Length: 486
Picture 1 (tube, rainbow, N blue to C red):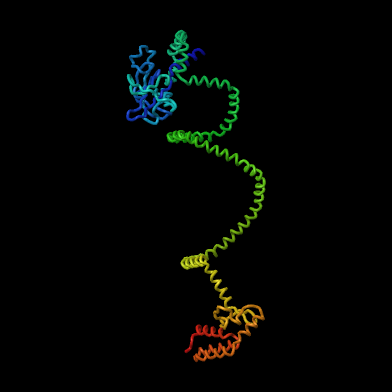
Picture 2 (cartoon, rainbow, N blue to C red; picture 1 turned 90 degrees about the vertical axis):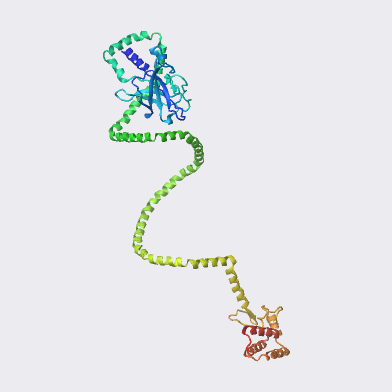
């Protein structure tokens, strides 16, 4: 029975061919067609789908018979065992063209009634495009050799070996199979490996699993631990499966965007590398600061713990503040009309305040305030005087012999604290008899009321001992200030 099972697997593997993927030229007007060579294309008909990753991208255009190279016609294969199926497929979506040299195609069942479709993988950009057939059958299409295609055996055909008369015929085949392959073991091995690459990969997987039997045993024990709680929460798993299906459908609708994201990923990673280095340098430089923060963390924790009583006390204060604010709300609302009136007053005062701002800015730039203060200071100082008793401050405008302008010092007008000098000035300022007569004569010439007033002032000045020259100056000043009365 073991021998029968092995031979059955061998027969199934012989019927399997390597996957064919045709690559479009991407050029201009003609559709991209691939001539894929299969060991067997039974039940594949014209018009069936061509799919890539489950998405329809084209159709089967035609089927034919050719030799193993795929370049000849049906008459070129003289032996039935050397004839192969030539399936011409057309790719209507230019996003999947051209097919590359590592492209693969396989004929797979589409439904339970035996319909077939061609499942392809267009290959990777690292491989060169498929070669175009320039002449003969399939000229203008792109050749996908038989080594890149496969035709899996249908399940119903495999199960027929358990039924009569297929079972008897299969027994005959088994009995004669050893004789027929007695000298062709290497050919059978090559056909099995070429028929379905998955067999070779399966052998590699089994060897890996054999080397990891202990890990598999541990996995079985751990999986039981993991699956037990999952079995208890079946509803959540069911919802996860439903949501995963929804996500998969949405992802399939955005397949082009996802593919573009993977296309841009290398450029993103190339830009991410310098940033990662900068982040690494930042982490190295930030290590001392983080260590310091780690040392300060206990103190910060204590501070936050100390904030808890403060927050409890502050809560009462905030509640009281809220209650006070609620009580003050009507009063604040009553101030709204006043605020509106103040707003109108402020808007109306804008021009005045603008002019005042310009005035104060001008006074600040030109020093007007300082000059005004200087005027007051020097004006006040100019009205001060000195007599025989000392310095004094005038509280009203006074005129006399010392108020006139003189280029030389005037006797009796000295402003110093030397008592001897002051007495000498007073003595020297007493007029002589001739000067008094001259002054009297000069005043007699003005008989007006103003002149009479001036004469009285002059006499007072003579009585105080002021010089005649000063008296004359005083008379001129008074004439200037009060005018003549004639």
